[in-house]
Image (spheres, one colour):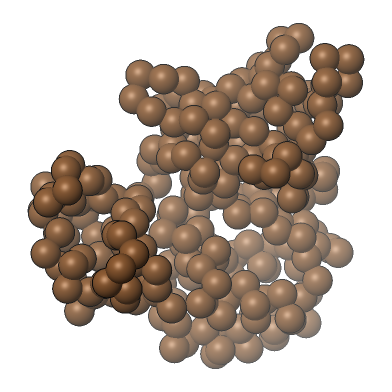
Length: 240
């Protein structure tokens, strides 16, 4: 289960190594740093974002911050829009300072004769393969085993919208009841990108709009208030 560390707020430049060491779940396994934290050396881990210091079992730590500007990170799932295309690759807007590249061979079972089918304007669900300073961000539309796993061109008829990145992390958190409750209540497809974009498609446009509005409001809803908010959502869907 993920949690804040004694409601600890950190600022850019704070050295948090001592805090992380005292909050480890496993004394044997090493500390794993996530978004917002950077390891300088064996004795120093600093925060480069302002926000809540979070931890999860297996010694995973990160900073939960409110940000709309996306900084690509390897293995992040992202939702992007194809803005240009050549015979070998396409460029994808993922909401970062620079566009990312997606090779047409970076699809399951793709070959030089049978490349991935992508058109300008398509909405793509992809994974960040490489991301580093002064290096072009590269995407792939398959998992580490070369399987589709939901990646690729998202079907038409869906709706993509933006939310703060911390809301996306909350939606992807397996310890949160949000996705589970919504999935049990309504039939809809979804893709969640850690670049602050969400895509959903349901049986009707009205339901899609109501669900998207509910997700946009999650930033202001506490975990303990989710059940009441879901009941209100039920009423809105029935009215539609």
